[in-house]
Length: 360
Picture 1: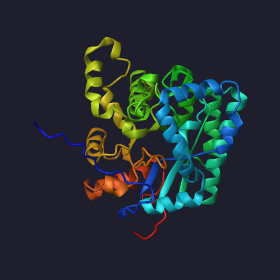
Picture 2: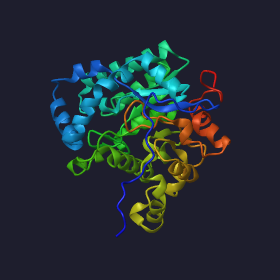
Picture 3: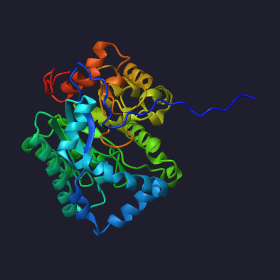
Picture 4: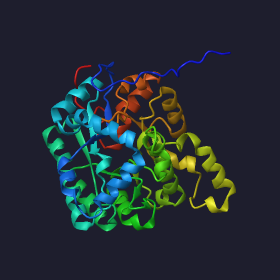
């Protein structure tokens, strides 16, 4: 009988662990901040209890307890500029494109409360940008459950605060973001040249993924794959040709399984809502590098192009990847330069050498 062995895996790099420093500027497009005042504001508001109950049920009790136990360690990383800067230096990250924590979307909120939630989160991001404009750029949040208002907020974020765009989820109050109700928001993003970072929170599969943290490890990539598929097949990308979308977690399962979408597009009349093959439309999207495996990163690059992949760490959560230079080490120097920073610099309208010149 063959001996049974435990699964072997590469040990993850923890935040704060020294890693090799790259000679190339490194821009992290996937990193979060928390606004504690938001949780104080929403506590007891109509709709919050129902949302919190559903969120906890989808996560499962074991995972909820793990997250609660981690919070004391995570809190300073999510809120302290000094801690964040030290961690960036350890990881070799020159510049962060910061965005609010996806746990604070609160798309259940009615207009007045929603406006205040967004204002508080955007103030948090603004404070980071003001304190260290050489180290941070910002993505804000908008009240996407109120699409016309969200379009106005996005315009103000970019015009008045110098933000690069906004972070949104894949699903808003039960509606896919490809729903035509969100056209005002997408039209504004198109017109403004806004960067829209799509980052899910939770999963529509509910209790089926409530064990083993599957709501995140399986559910989050699945939600992103569904979202991108609907943006493609529903024609959102074709109606708004200048959209600049970044998909979290490497785009989920879609990029490496896009051949099946192409096949459906070719043979099924009910899968012909888009004007050209889904795999070709993937090359209009940017994808972060949070895929954890260098070989999967290489395959993602081959599928979408080496100009469409950008570094993301998912700082400071435990599902992140905190060795950017190690993740890209198997790539050619030219590709390392692109993925670590040059692609993000181009996307964000920065000079190719963006980021502080710190000694490497």
